[in-house]
Amino acid sequence: MDIEKIRAEFPVCENYHYFQSAGMSPMPLPVYEKITEGYRSLTDHGDIFFHKDIEKQEEMFGIIAGMLNCNKKDISMAESNSMAMSLTGMALKKKHNDFNIVSMEEEFPSNSVPLEYLDIEMRYVKHKDHRYHIEDILALCDENTLAVQTSYVQYGTGFRQDLYSLGAELEKRNILFIVNATQAFPFFPPDMKANNIDVLSISAHKWGFSGHIGTFYVTSPDFRKNYPSPIAGWLSVDVSQSDDFIHTAKNKDFDLWEDGRRYLFASANLKSRLGFSASLKFLQEYGIDNLRKHMLEISDYMIKYLKELPCEIKSPNAGHSERSAIVVFSMTGKNNAEIVEKLAEKKIIVALRDGGIRASVNIFTNKDDVDALINGIQGLI
Ligand SMILES: Cc1ncc(COP(=O)(O)O)c(C=O)c1O
Image (cartoon, protein in one colour):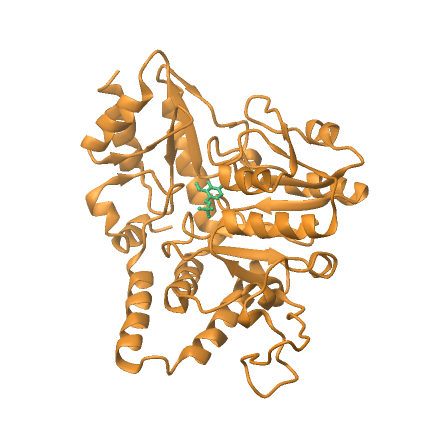
């Protein structure tokens, strides 16, 4: 793995030791070029390539579907994870009155706020050393539990859940499985079928290297059949029997697309979205498995040196199976907020999350970055 070659594609590496990818990954040059090329095309050709861009978006969904083991027709996009969870909650409420959803107490609020706002009874599993044990999740479920919702990777600790075992238990109990893989994809792509996932949401700005393009919203065919979309837009309408792609009739019955297009409600910023296909192409040149391996190894290196400092490592780190690219720690007896600020003055960018210091490694992180972080902290304590 030629990390220096990768770094040459990330101008951010010239400016910072950047450990804030769990907030948003920086953009590599090939993605930037693809997006600016898209805007240049709008400048030179206006709307002429709108339908071509829709086709390219479908091709991109095809590649993502291959990574998630689902059909490209299961994939759509929402404005955000908050919107994806709102849509999901509204769909559940349209069908059922009295139910609860079991979730985890440290979830990012875009998982919890939309569902609480809909007055859905939310039950939160307590963590044990920032892990969520499957028996504790199941213990909170009862006959009124319609769904379990979890992040694949927790934003505030980096804990990676065992989706396979949890999904198998939920399948046995006929409980829906709603997963937010925002802090995992594309390096840890969840398998929709093997994990029995009904609804998957992935906000792409974290690890997608293509800016704020929204959320991939992935639903199983059964979920769509059982839970009709609670809202619709002009592009949601099935026009396969019509010779126009716009449903102009008024007060005439219509159906929504059976597939994920029902959620592609309306006009969207396709030029930016298509940057994600350039991102996947870039990552695939190096091999996503190799990149994941590098990220786990460089975070091992960070953890090894953190363990020599007076700090508590919040992230479960017993083995790679529960790990991700996120490492969170707290300096013993020190003001973490102040440390984060002082590190930023030295161009070492970490984040304060839930009182802890979050340092996320990425495909471009090298040992010099980690050494700068460790030395930087040592100089402040
Ligand atoms: C796990 C997780 N999900 C989602 C988001 C972003 O949510 P949204 O797409 O609603 O802005 C974040 C941001 O920190 C996150 O960590």
